[in-house]
Length: 583
Image 1 (cartoon, rainbow, N blue to C red):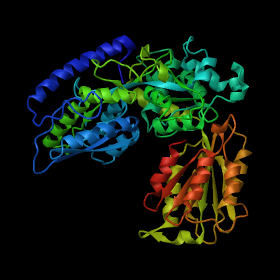
Image 2 (cartoon, rainbow, N blue to C red; image 1 turned 30 degrees about the horizontal axis):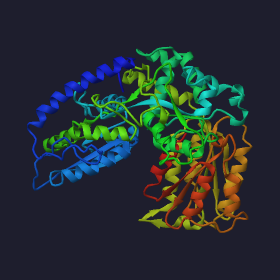
Image 3 (cartoon, rainbow, N blue to C red; image 1 turned 180 degrees about the vertical axis):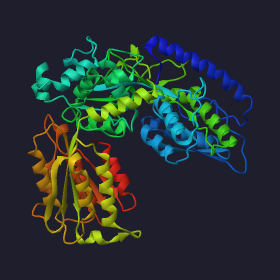
Image 4 (tube, rainbow, N blue to C red; image 1 turned 180 degrees about the horizontal axis):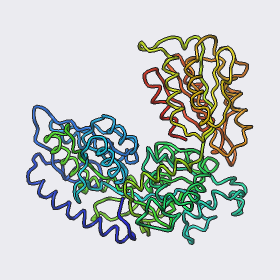
């Protein structure tokens, strides 16, 4: 992210940073050998960088990076590995920024890390210091250069943006808060056919755009662009404002790109607007990627300020990063910052960090974006303020009513890889319960030959321990009444009169053997449709082991707007954690 001030000031500071960094590159280049190929004006290969000398033991670099830039990284890493074969190989893994931070804190050992925004470097150093009494990232002016940039925007369907006054009227977070809480929805703007305002952003614990969104909401609440304090965050004004914006959220998630794709594929009935990156708006308006887009998507640059997602490149200062790895990582960094790769980034909708490369198509109005924006850039708060924002958001976020459904048929007594399916499933359920807040609603249903609601959906806090005790007592026996159980709980949730996100999470290890309903009937019943399809009950299905009917579970999940997961006793806790990121 960029420091506070207007866009012109931000770009000037970035230019000074790049110029100083280029001097370092010139010094490094004189020490390297094995020139990579010449610049390819067609954007195909060519590095304008240097590979380390070939050795009998080539260096392998493990690279965790923000998944938002996956297409570009996969492209350039493939060429780099070809050019530098015999000296260095990069294994690149796309991950959510918050997810990769937690993985590193918990023991993963990548050599290079490039989250979507510099805010994660601040959080990583703070948490690494607390855990290991040292820092893991050097934060000098040239230590973590920006690879590419992309403003954080609110992607909105063009007709809906025009109804708010775009492009003539600047749109602010206050406009989003007002629309989120207007009981008339889009009817207040003359378009009842669009239904409610349906908003989305990713989970701030796992995703950069989600964290940027809630920081921006807090800034807007107190009319600031810099020097945000914990007192500001804790004020009733900020809490009410954030609660108002969050009230129209249809669900959260861990991937900005996935959320954006759901909006583009689902249409205005699924989402009205979503916090994303400018580069994703460019993708939306690229016919080869989205040939059936119902309307163009435009980028809203909130008038009260936003951030740049600056994709810093950090060589970790850790014991496993040897001098040879550091040298190889520096060569890889130089390659990514070279003109050929920077021009290629522009082709993928990113703004190059090399300011000698002019911003041009596809970062243009024809693709729904404005290279002259944003006009107002927010300051990255301190780690203490960011943590206060996350804690406050957890109180103000839209809550969930979720029914957990567990298959307890006889086959759940079997083991996979020496681990009991039913025992591991109980542990996964307990993990999920632990990740929900006291004010979320939770219910538990089990099924075999028949189904039993062990606890109806109600506030979790007062019954948390009793739910955990109930889960621990579930035993397996009987047949598989899957379809009828899902349909019954779907109907029950429809009758629940709350304004919460509503969801079902169902785990099963086999085919339906006893239901009265067919798969086609269930799919028809749970299909989300109409102008408020995004607010429908979402079903997240877990195909538990190889005997589960993955096809049927995928159809049910997709029809509802949910997602299907493959589960085993070995990964089931991680699966339940992934599902919890939607809430």
